[in-house]
Image (cartoon, rainbow over all chains, first blue to last red; front, side, top):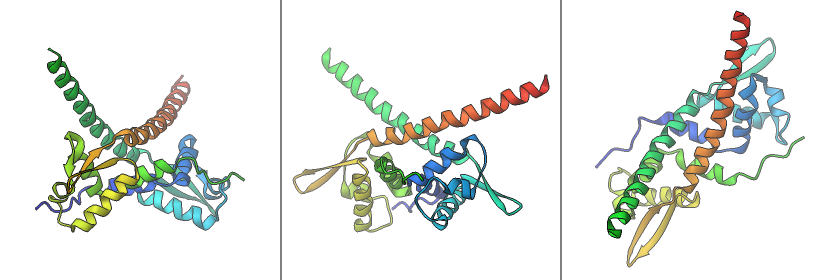
Length: 112
Length: 112
């Protein structure tokens, strides 16, 4: 019996962080540069505390760096974990395309 | 004030489904074809009930089709939601690459 996989906790945190529309939207907001917490919170109809919670989830997944600029907390994107998620899906996509190639080969053989 | 985005509930469910190593592993198991629930549960050191719960999360995200074959429940992959997740990350990657291009242009201008 195989033990439960445990070496990809980061991917868990990254996909979890992406599983909310506000968190995905925040990532899109900071692609162009850093923003303060209150600037980030402004577009949403939720409390500042709720936005701070979302920011912590992004920070824990390594997607967000928070830097203190006097009394202002500025948030920067760290896109490396996104490339980790992209990598998993790309690897998976290869499996998936192989499967369709094998099916196409099989159908071609049957036609002959 | 912008309302909380609500038109991408599917992406929430897809990323949530990918946020667990057993669920990602199950998806890899069924890339080569369908498997029964007990075959899928076999490699993991968790209860059949726990695996069934993971399968329901994958099914709710549209990643898994379950078909009854007599008394056996067979699970097939539906990869379309993965391509949705891949699409979001790809779009995002374009933003990210644009950002680095802009930075490179800026540095090049400064060098002149």
